[in-house]
Amino acid sequence: MGHDQGIFEGSARRLRRVNKRVLSRVLLASLTIALIATAALWVGSSQPTPTRPPPPLSPTSTPSDSPTPSPSSVGARLTGTGPFIIFQLNDSDGPFYTVDISAPQRGKILLGIPLGQTMFIVNQAQVWGRIAPIPIQTFVAQDGTATDVTTRYWLLRNGFGFDDRPVTFHGDPMRWLASPDGKRLIAVEFTPGTNAKYSDLILVPTDGSTPRKLSRILTSGAKNEDGILTPLVWLPRGGWLGMPICQCEAGPQSWYKISSQGKVSRASWLGFPRDGTPGVSADGHYLSIFDQPTKDCGSNGFKLCADGPVRVLLADTVNQRMRVLATYNNDVRDTEDPAENSTAITADGTLVATSLSGLNPVKVIDAHTARVVTTISYRDYNLRPLAFLDKSTLLLRNDNSIFAARIEFGGTVHVTEILRGQFLYAGWTR
Image (tube, rainbow, N blue to C red; front, side, top):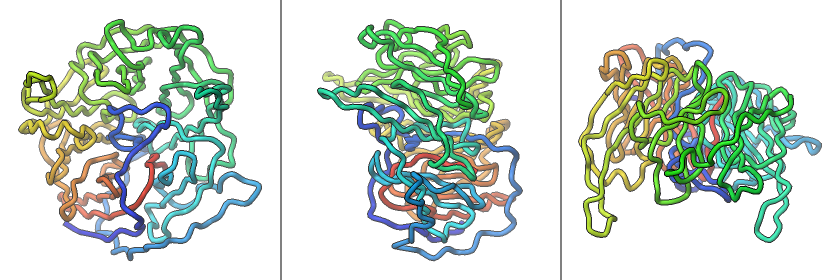
Protein backbone atom coordinates (compact mmCIF):
# COMPACT_ATOMS: atom_id res chain seq x y z
CA MET A 1 0.00 0.00 0.00
CA GLY A 2 1.48 3.34 -1.05
CA HIS A 3 0.87 6.37 1.17
CA ASP A 4 1.24 9.77 -0.48
CA GLN A 5 1.00 12.99 1.46
CA GLY A 6 -1.83 15.51 1.23
CA ILE A 7 -1.33 18.86 -0.46
CA PHE A 8 -4.03 21.16 0.90
CA GLU A 9 -4.53 21.48 4.62
CA GLY A 10 -6.90 23.63 6.62
CA SER A 11 -8.68 23.52 9.94
CA ALA A 12 -10.44 20.19 10.25
CA ARG A 13 -14.19 20.02 10.19
CA ARG A 14 -16.65 17.28 9.33
CA LEU A 15 -17.27 16.91 5.61
CA ARG A 16 -20.87 17.81 4.95
CA ARG A 17 -23.35 19.24 2.49
CA VAL A 18 -25.81 21.91 3.47
CA ASN A 19 -29.02 23.51 2.33
CA LYS A 20 -29.96 26.30 4.69
CA ARG A 21 -33.63 25.79 3.91
CA VAL A 22 -34.01 22.07 3.25
CA LEU A 23 -31.78 19.40 4.76
CA SER A 24 -32.19 15.72 3.95
CA ARG A 25 -30.60 13.29 6.38
CA VAL A 26 -30.78 10.40 3.93
CA LEU A 27 -28.89 12.35 1.28
CA LEU A 28 -26.15 13.47 3.66
CA ALA A 29 -23.84 10.82 2.35
CA SER A 30 -21.06 12.42 0.60
CA LEU A 31 -21.34 15.63 0.05
CA THR A 32 -22.00 16.64 -0.40
CA ILE A 33 -22.05 15.02 -2.30
CA ALA A 34 -23.80 17.02 -0.72
CA LEU A 35 -22.82 14.78 -3.32
CA ILE A 36 -23.42 14.17 -1.22
CA ALA A 37 -23.07 11.05 -1.18
CA THR A 38 -21.65 7.42 -2.90
CA ALA A 39 -21.97 7.69 -6.56
CA ALA A 40 -21.08 6.39 -9.92
CA LEU A 41 -20.02 8.69 -12.70
CA TRP A 42 -19.87 9.44 -16.39
CA VAL A 43 -16.63 8.85 -18.25
CA GLY A 44 -16.10 8.85 -21.99
CA SER A 45 -13.69 5.91 -21.94
CA SER A 46 -11.63 3.96 -19.45
CA GLN A 47 -8.20 5.32 -18.68
CA PRO A 48 -5.13 3.08 -18.85
CA THR A 49 -3.97 1.56 -15.60
CA PRO A 50 -0.97 3.47 -14.26
CA THR A 51 2.27 1.53 -14.32
CA ARG A 52 3.87 3.27 -11.35
CA PRO A 53 2.69 5.21 -8.32
CA PRO A 54 2.49 9.00 -8.55
CA PRO A 55 5.40 10.91 -6.98
CA PRO A 56 4.99 11.98 -3.36
CA LEU A 57 3.37 15.37 -2.92
CA SER A 58 4.63 18.08 -0.59
CA PRO A 59 2.14 19.31 1.99
CA THR A 60 1.06 22.93 1.58
CA SER A 61 -0.54 24.66 4.54
CA THR A 62 -1.31 27.98 2.84
CA PRO A 63 -1.77 27.48 -0.90
CA SER A 64 -2.19 30.57 -3.04
CA ASP A 65 -5.53 31.30 -4.69
CA SER A 66 -4.77 31.67 -8.38
CA PRO A 67 -5.87 32.55 -10.94
CA THR A 68 -8.02 35.37 -9.52
CA PRO A 69 -11.22 36.31 -11.37
CA SER A 70 -11.26 39.74 -12.95
CA PRO A 71 -13.47 42.42 -11.32
CA SER A 72 -15.93 42.21 -14.21
CA SER A 73 -16.39 38.46 -13.82
CA VAL A 74 -18.01 36.36 -11.13
CA GLY A 75 -15.66 33.48 -11.81
CA ALA A 76 -12.53 32.42 -13.66
CA ARG A 77 -12.57 29.70 -16.29
CA LEU A 78 -11.99 26.14 -15.16
CA THR A 79 -8.77 25.40 -17.04
CA GLY A 80 -6.12 22.74 -16.67
CA THR A 81 -5.63 19.06 -17.43
CA GLY A 82 -8.13 17.65 -14.94
CA PRO A 83 -10.00 15.84 -13.58
CA PHE A 84 -11.01 18.59 -11.14
CA ILE A 85 -12.39 18.37 -7.62
CA ILE A 86 -14.85 21.27 -7.17
CA PHE A 87 -15.79 22.45 -3.70
CA GLN A 88 -17.12 25.40 -1.76
CA LEU A 89 -15.73 26.73 1.49
CA ASN A 90 -17.84 26.10 4.56
CA ASP A 91 -20.45 28.70 3.65
CA SER A 92 -23.26 28.24 1.13
CA ASP A 93 -22.83 31.77 -0.22
CA GLY A 94 -19.02 31.73 -0.26
CA PRO A 95 -16.45 31.18 -3.02
CA PHE A 96 -15.92 28.00 -5.01
CA TYR A 97 -12.51 26.44 -5.56
CA THR A 98 -11.07 23.57 -7.53
CA VAL A 99 -8.06 21.26 -7.25
CA ASP A 100 -6.65 19.78 -10.45
CA ILE A 101 -6.04 16.12 -9.59
CA SER A 102 -3.43 15.85 -12.33
CA ALA A 103 -1.42 18.66 -10.65
CA PRO A 104 -2.58 18.80 -7.02
CA GLN A 105 0.63 20.54 -5.95
CA ARG A 106 -0.85 23.74 -7.41
CA GLY A 107 -3.20 23.84 -4.43
CA LYS A 108 -6.70 25.25 -4.53
CA ILE A 109 -7.66 27.46 -7.47
CA LEU A 110 -10.28 30.17 -6.95
CA LEU A 111 -13.31 29.91 -9.25
CA GLY A 112 -15.17 32.89 -7.82
CA ILE A 113 -18.35 33.68 -5.92
CA PRO A 114 -21.54 33.25 -7.96
CA LEU A 115 -24.39 35.57 -6.99
CA GLY A 116 -26.82 33.80 -4.68
CA GLN A 117 -26.88 30.88 -2.29
CA THR A 118 -25.90 27.31 -3.05
CA MET A 119 -28.80 24.88 -3.02
CA PHE A 120 -28.53 21.50 -1.38
CA ILE A 121 -25.92 19.70 -3.48
CA VAL A 122 -26.61 16.04 -4.18
CA ASN A 123 -24.23 13.68 -5.96
CA GLN A 124 -25.33 13.84 -9.59
CA ALA A 125 -23.97 10.39 -10.15
CA GLN A 126 -24.68 9.85 -13.84
CA VAL A 127 -23.09 13.10 -15.04
CA TRP A 128 -20.05 13.18 -12.77
CA GLY A 129 -17.04 13.49 -14.99
CA ARG A 130 -18.94 15.13 -17.85
CA ILE A 131 -20.19 18.15 -15.90
CA ALA A 132 -20.35 19.22 -12.27
CA PRO A 133 -23.82 20.71 -11.75
CA ILE A 134 -23.81 23.62 -9.28
CA PRO A 135 -27.24 25.12 -8.43
CA ILE A 136 -27.36 28.69 -7.09
CA GLN A 137 -30.52 30.52 -5.98
CA THR A 138 -31.39 34.19 -5.56
CA PHE A 139 -34.55 35.22 -3.74
CA VAL A 140 -36.24 37.92 -1.72
CA ALA A 141 -36.65 37.15 1.99
CA GLN A 142 -39.97 38.43 3.27
CA ASP A 143 -41.48 37.52 6.67
CA GLY A 144 -39.29 34.44 6.86
CA THR A 145 -40.37 33.25 3.43
CA ALA A 146 -38.35 33.17 0.21
CA THR A 147 -40.17 34.86 -2.67
CA ASP A 148 -39.30 35.75 -6.27
CA VAL A 149 -36.95 32.76 -6.47
CA THR A 150 -34.67 32.26 -9.44
CA THR A 151 -32.56 29.10 -9.74
CA ARG A 152 -29.45 29.03 -11.91
CA TYR A 153 -27.60 25.84 -12.75
CA TRP A 154 -23.93 26.13 -13.69
CA LEU A 155 -22.89 22.96 -15.49
CA LEU A 156 -19.15 23.30 -14.89
CA ARG A 157 -16.65 21.49 -17.08
CA ASN A 158 -13.18 22.07 -18.47
CA GLY A 159 -12.98 25.55 -20.00
CA PHE A 160 -16.18 26.80 -18.33
CA GLY A 161 -16.80 28.76 -15.15
CA PHE A 162 -19.18 31.10 -13.35
CA ASP A 163 -18.61 33.72 -16.04
CA ASP A 164 -20.50 31.54 -18.53
CA ARG A 165 -24.26 31.71 -19.00
CA PRO A 166 -26.07 29.35 -16.59
CA VAL A 167 -29.30 27.44 -17.13
CA THR A 168 -31.91 29.74 -15.59
CA PHE A 169 -35.16 28.48 -14.08
CA HIS A 170 -37.61 31.03 -12.68
CA GLY A 171 -38.89 29.01 -9.77
CA ASP A 172 -37.94 27.11 -6.63
CA PRO A 173 -37.39 23.43 -7.44
CA MET A 174 -37.00 21.36 -4.30
CA ARG A 175 -35.40 18.41 -6.11
CA TRP A 176 -33.65 18.02 -9.46
CA LEU A 177 -31.52 15.61 -11.45
CA ALA A 178 -29.39 16.13 -14.57
CA SER A 179 -29.52 13.71 -17.50
CA PRO A 180 -26.41 11.61 -18.23
CA ASP A 181 -25.56 13.77 -21.27
CA GLY A 182 -26.14 17.00 -19.34
CA LYS A 183 -28.74 18.21 -21.85
CA ARG A 184 -31.79 18.17 -19.58
CA LEU A 185 -32.83 18.49 -15.96
CA ILE A 186 -35.86 16.95 -14.28
CA ALA A 187 -37.08 19.30 -11.53
CA VAL A 188 -39.69 18.87 -8.79
CA GLU A 189 -41.44 22.09 -7.72
CA PHE A 190 -44.33 22.57 -5.29
CA THR A 191 -47.58 23.37 -7.11
CA PRO A 192 -48.74 26.85 -6.02
CA GLY A 193 -51.85 26.95 -3.85
CA THR A 194 -51.77 23.29 -2.80
CA ASN A 195 -49.93 23.70 0.53
CA ALA A 196 -47.15 21.50 -0.88
CA LYS A 197 -49.50 18.52 -1.24
CA TYR A 198 -48.87 18.43 -4.99
CA SER A 199 -45.80 19.11 -7.09
CA ASP A 200 -45.08 19.70 -10.75
CA LEU A 201 -42.51 17.62 -12.65
CA ILE A 202 -40.71 19.94 -15.07
CA LEU A 203 -38.23 19.12 -17.84
CA VAL A 204 -35.65 21.88 -18.17
CA PRO A 205 -33.45 21.89 -21.33
CA THR A 206 -29.92 23.09 -20.65
CA ASP A 207 -29.65 24.83 -24.03
CA GLY A 208 -31.90 27.67 -22.89
CA SER A 209 -35.10 26.32 -24.44
CA THR A 210 -38.41 26.75 -22.66
CA PRO A 211 -39.00 24.32 -19.73
CA ARG A 212 -41.95 21.94 -20.12
CA LYS A 213 -44.27 20.74 -17.36
CA LEU A 214 -44.48 16.97 -17.52
CA SER A 215 -47.20 16.23 -14.97
CA ARG A 216 -48.61 17.02 -11.54
CA ILE A 217 -48.00 14.43 -8.83
CA LEU A 218 -48.46 13.89 -5.12
CA THR A 219 -45.41 15.56 -3.60
CA SER A 220 -44.54 12.47 -1.59
CA GLY A 221 -45.25 10.09 -4.46
CA ALA A 222 -47.99 8.19 -2.57
CA LYS A 223 -50.54 8.88 0.18
CA ASN A 224 -48.73 6.78 2.79
CA GLU A 225 -45.38 8.54 2.28
CA ASP A 226 -43.78 11.66 3.73
CA GLY A 227 -41.31 14.02 2.13
CA ILE A 228 -40.63 14.91 -1.49
CA LEU A 229 -40.35 12.35 -4.28
CA THR A 230 -36.71 12.75 -5.31
CA PRO A 231 -35.44 11.52 -8.70
CA LEU A 232 -32.17 9.64 -8.18
CA VAL A 233 -31.69 7.68 -11.42
CA TRP A 234 -32.21 8.65 -15.06
CA LEU A 235 -33.25 5.36 -16.67
CA PRO A 236 -31.79 4.18 -20.01
CA ARG A 237 -35.22 3.49 -21.54
CA GLY A 238 -36.83 6.69 -20.33
CA GLY A 239 -38.21 7.80 -17.01
CA TRP A 240 -36.64 7.91 -13.57
CA LEU A 241 -36.27 6.02 -10.31
CA GLY A 242 -36.63 7.86 -7.03
CA MET A 243 -37.83 7.77 -3.46
CA PRO A 244 -39.53 10.26 -1.10
CA ILE A 245 -37.01 12.00 1.15
CA CYS A 246 -37.83 14.38 3.97
CA GLN A 247 -36.42 16.22 6.96
CA CYS A 248 -38.28 14.02 9.41
CA GLU A 249 -38.01 10.78 11.33
CA ALA A 250 -40.10 8.86 8.81
CA GLY A 251 -38.22 7.05 6.08
CA PRO A 252 -39.41 6.10 2.60
CA GLN A 253 -41.59 3.02 2.28
CA SER A 254 -40.84 2.20 -1.34
CA TRP A 255 -38.86 3.00 -4.44
CA TYR A 256 -40.91 4.60 -7.21
CA LYS A 257 -40.67 4.75 -10.98
CA ILE A 258 -41.61 7.96 -12.77
CA SER A 259 -42.51 7.25 -16.40
CA SER A 260 -41.37 9.49 -19.25
CA GLN A 261 -44.93 10.90 -19.22
CA GLY A 262 -44.68 11.69 -15.51
CA LYS A 263 -46.82 8.85 -14.14
CA VAL A 264 -45.69 7.54 -10.72
CA SER A 265 -45.82 3.85 -9.75
CA ARG A 266 -44.15 1.67 -7.14
CA ALA A 267 -40.90 -0.08 -8.08
CA SER A 268 -41.36 -2.88 -5.56
CA TRP A 269 -38.77 -5.10 -7.27
CA LEU A 270 -36.03 -2.89 -5.68
CA GLY A 271 -37.15 -3.91 -2.20
CA PHE A 272 -37.32 -1.69 0.87
CA PRO A 273 -35.34 1.55 0.32
CA ARG A 274 -32.52 1.86 2.85
CA ASP A 275 -29.91 3.63 0.72
CA GLY A 276 -30.73 7.20 -0.30
CA THR A 277 -27.57 7.63 -2.36
CA PRO A 278 -27.05 4.53 -4.50
CA GLY A 279 -24.19 4.27 -6.93
CA VAL A 280 -25.41 4.67 -10.51
CA SER A 281 -23.77 3.57 -13.75
CA ALA A 282 -23.49 6.23 -16.45
CA ASP A 283 -26.50 4.97 -18.41
CA GLY A 284 -28.60 4.11 -15.36
CA HIS A 285 -28.56 0.40 -16.19
CA TYR A 286 -26.97 -0.64 -12.87
CA LEU A 287 -27.26 0.55 -9.27
CA SER A 288 -25.06 -0.38 -6.32
CA ILE A 289 -27.06 -0.36 -3.09
CA PHE A 290 -25.99 -0.63 0.55
CA ASP A 291 -28.73 -2.53 2.39
CA GLN A 292 -28.62 -2.62 6.21
CA PRO A 293 -31.91 -3.96 7.62
CA THR A 294 -32.91 -2.97 11.16
CA LYS A 295 -35.95 -3.22 13.41
CA ASP A 296 -37.18 -1.60 16.63
CA CYS A 297 -36.37 -3.76 19.63
CA GLY A 298 -36.87 -1.39 22.58
CA SER A 299 -40.03 -0.49 24.47
CA ASN A 300 -39.47 3.21 23.76
CA GLY A 301 -38.87 2.63 20.06
CA PHE A 302 -35.41 4.20 20.16
CA LYS A 303 -33.35 1.03 20.20
CA LEU A 304 -32.51 -0.69 16.94
CA CYS A 305 -31.51 -4.29 16.36
CA ALA A 306 -30.20 -6.06 13.29
CA ASP A 307 -32.86 -7.61 11.07
CA GLY A 308 -30.53 -9.67 8.92
CA PRO A 309 -27.05 -9.25 7.49
CA VAL A 310 -25.76 -6.17 5.67
CA ARG A 311 -25.87 -6.75 1.92
CA VAL A 312 -24.25 -4.97 -1.01
CA LEU A 313 -26.68 -5.29 -3.90
CA LEU A 314 -26.41 -4.84 -7.66
CA ALA A 315 -29.67 -3.81 -9.32
CA ASP A 316 -30.26 -4.26 -13.06
CA THR A 317 -32.85 -1.58 -13.92
CA VAL A 318 -33.46 -2.90 -17.46
CA ASN A 319 -34.25 -6.49 -16.51
CA GLN A 320 -35.46 -5.57 -12.98
CA ARG A 321 -33.21 -8.05 -11.20
CA MET A 322 -31.21 -7.88 -7.97
CA ARG A 323 -27.97 -9.70 -7.11
CA VAL A 324 -26.12 -9.94 -3.80
CA LEU A 325 -22.45 -9.03 -4.25
CA ALA A 326 -21.37 -9.21 -0.59
CA THR A 327 -22.71 -9.79 2.92
CA TYR A 328 -21.37 -8.46 6.23
CA ASN A 329 -22.14 -8.81 9.89
CA ASN A 330 -24.80 -6.24 10.78
CA ASP A 331 -23.37 -3.98 13.47
CA VAL A 332 -26.39 -1.84 14.28
CA ARG A 333 -24.19 0.89 15.77
CA ASP A 334 -23.28 1.78 12.20
CA THR A 335 -26.83 2.99 11.57
CA GLU A 336 -26.20 6.01 13.82
CA ASP A 337 -24.48 7.62 10.83
CA PRO A 338 -25.76 6.12 7.56
CA ALA A 339 -23.37 8.35 5.61
CA GLU A 340 -20.48 6.21 6.85
CA ASN A 341 -21.72 3.25 4.82
CA SER A 342 -21.66 3.71 1.07
CA THR A 343 -21.00 2.27 -2.37
CA ALA A 344 -19.74 3.54 -5.73
CA ILE A 345 -19.94 1.91 -9.14
CA THR A 346 -17.92 2.40 -12.34
CA ALA A 347 -19.50 4.08 -15.36
CA ASP A 348 -19.94 0.72 -17.10
CA GLY A 349 -21.20 -1.06 -13.98
CA THR A 350 -18.39 -3.63 -13.83
CA LEU A 351 -16.78 -2.66 -10.49
CA VAL A 352 -18.37 -1.75 -7.16
CA ALA A 353 -16.57 -0.21 -4.19
CA THR A 354 -18.08 -0.57 -0.74
CA SER A 355 -17.24 0.22 2.86
CA LEU A 356 -18.47 -0.26 6.40
CA SER A 357 -18.01 2.35 9.10
CA GLY A 358 -15.19 1.84 11.53
CA LEU A 359 -11.65 0.87 10.64
CA ASN A 360 -12.62 -1.40 7.77
CA PRO A 361 -10.88 -1.32 4.38
CA VAL A 362 -12.78 -0.32 1.27
CA LYS A 363 -13.41 -3.36 -0.91
CA VAL A 364 -13.51 -3.22 -4.71
CA ILE A 365 -15.73 -6.00 -6.06
CA ASP A 366 -16.08 -7.42 -9.58
CA ALA A 367 -19.80 -6.97 -10.32
CA HIS A 368 -19.93 -10.06 -12.55
CA THR A 369 -18.17 -12.59 -10.32
CA ALA A 370 -18.65 -10.93 -6.89
CA ARG A 371 -14.91 -11.49 -6.34
CA VAL A 372 -12.97 -8.93 -4.29
CA VAL A 373 -10.46 -7.37 -6.69
CA THR A 374 -8.55 -5.36 -4.08
CA THR A 375 -8.90 -3.65 -0.72
CA ILE A 376 -8.00 -0.04 0.09
CA SER A 377 -6.91 1.45 3.41
CA TYR A 378 -4.95 4.52 4.43
CA ARG A 379 -3.29 4.89 7.82
CA ASP A 380 -6.02 4.51 10.45
CA TYR A 381 -8.62 6.55 8.52
CA ASN A 382 -12.21 5.45 8.07
CA LEU A 383 -12.56 5.75 4.29
CA ARG A 384 -15.78 5.64 2.25
CA PRO A 385 -16.05 5.56 -1.56
CA LEU A 386 -17.33 8.62 -3.42
CA ALA A 387 -16.97 7.86 -7.12
CA PHE A 388 -14.84 6.11 -9.72
CA LEU A 389 -13.04 8.60 -11.96
CA ASP A 390 -12.25 5.65 -14.20
CA LYS A 391 -11.71 1.93 -13.64
CA SER A 392 -8.32 2.49 -12.04
CA THR A 393 -9.00 5.63 -9.97
CA LEU A 394 -11.42 5.89 -7.06
CA LEU A 395 -12.33 8.99 -5.07
CA LEU A 396 -12.63 8.36 -1.32
CA ARG A 397 -13.52 10.50 1.68
CA ASN A 398 -13.45 10.61 5.42
CA ASP A 399 -14.85 13.28 7.75
CA ASN A 400 -12.24 15.86 6.81
CA SER A 401 -10.57 14.90 3.53
CA ILE A 402 -10.91 13.65 -0.03
CA PHE A 403 -8.48 11.05 -1.38
CA ALA A 404 -7.66 9.53 -4.78
CA ALA A 405 -6.82 5.81 -4.84
CA ARG A 406 -5.00 4.58 -7.95
CA ILE A 407 -5.38 0.85 -8.59
CA GLU A 408 -2.58 -0.80 -10.53
CA PHE A 409 -2.64 -4.04 -12.45
CA GLY A 410 -2.48 -6.85 -9.91
CA GLY A 411 -4.39 -4.92 -7.25
CA THR A 412 -1.65 -2.69 -5.81
CA VAL A 413 -3.16 0.58 -4.60
CA HIS A 414 -1.62 4.02 -3.97
CA VAL A 415 -3.63 6.58 -2.01
CA THR A 416 -3.12 10.36 -2.24
CA GLU A 417 -4.82 12.86 0.07
CA ILE A 418 -6.10 15.52 -2.33
CA LEU A 419 -8.03 17.92 -0.09
CA ARG A 420 -8.25 18.59 3.62
CA GLY A 421 -10.07 21.33 5.50
CA GLN A 422 -13.39 23.13 5.91
CA PHE A 423 -15.47 22.83 2.78
CA LEU A 424 -18.77 21.78 1.30
CA TYR A 425 -18.09 19.15 -1.36
CA ALA A 426 -19.70 19.79 -4.75
CA GLY A 427 -18.39 17.20 -7.22
CA TRP A 428 -15.82 16.58 -9.92
CA THR A 429 -15.51 17.02 -13.65
CA ARG A 430 -13.03 16.39 -16.45
